[in-house]
Length: 109
Length: 114
Image (cartoon, rainbow over all chains, first blue to last red; front, side, top):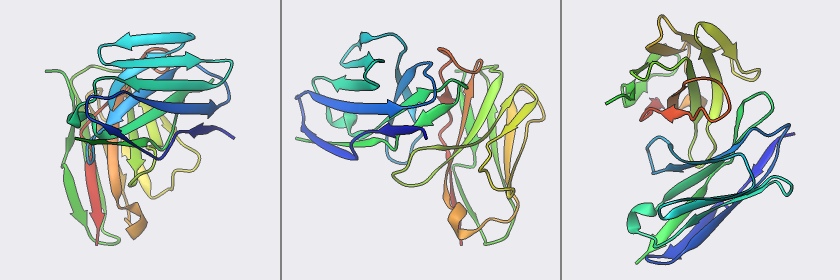
């Protein structure tokens, strides 16, 4: 079966750095997405990785290792508005998005 | 601004009473998706349209139907809502299927079934 694993919940302090991990087992791989979802709102696109390595975009960076079936999202200089769920999703060989259940990130002052 | 619009944002219906949710897009994307998302769970794909080509997920109940009368609009019809159908319904679009064609989401419709 296809599976995406990410921690259910994480807590971090304002101004700090947090890394949210995602491991996946899918039938084929055509890229990995990270989405941010605030409570009661729709997911918004953060990043897309299809090649190994680190992609940096402002305070957010995303890393991919295809051989390990592993990705992480790194958030720097955390702000209170970063409190949200972060969803990892993998595009499989049929170009279907397989979603993780999301990691709820709680930021404390 | 180009966007994905969903109406209504909140919908209350009675058990068994048909309900229709709507989605429109100004992005001129070929693909439109409907997802169901329950609290603290991953979005679950119900079906998608690639242009006029309808693609139903194998485990989507027959109670859920969809229509796409033109490129811009897509509707989700729930014929006989049950209590278990209470969820957030998300519409998304992408230019094409796969690759770097990111899915863009509307704000969602939260459905309550009484």
